[in-house]
Length: 146
Image (tube, rainbow, N blue to C red; front, side):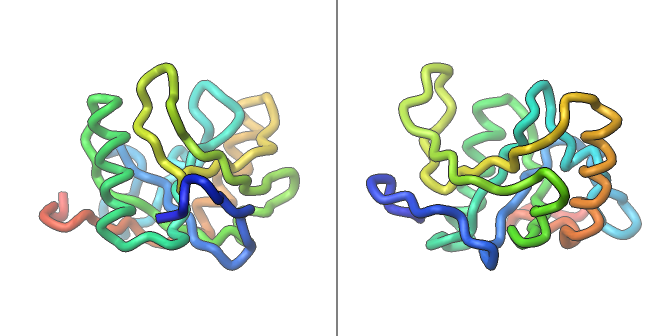
């Protein structure tokens, strides 16, 4: 994982993961993400996890930590290249989580997709474009297809 004392800026060729915590966020037949996976929830920033300097086990560790914190199930993740996130007003920025007062687990690999507009319909338009660029759902080890 990224050294928490030296978090670099996000580069265009990096890959980031959007973790899936709801069954309705992917198409069961194809595994493709639904736009709702890439629509910000309550905020205008969208959390993602950088793959940079991470093993696959560490990526899943971050996803499981978030699921446990939220009391959710981890159904998988969809990966997307950072350059494909730079749509219209959007860009990806490093946003390390450290000593969060709400108790969110520390994560030096955390990033946000920023630049979403305020209106939900405008956010959904961008979310559709992100979902179209992301890969199909990847399952954590030990989880069977549902």
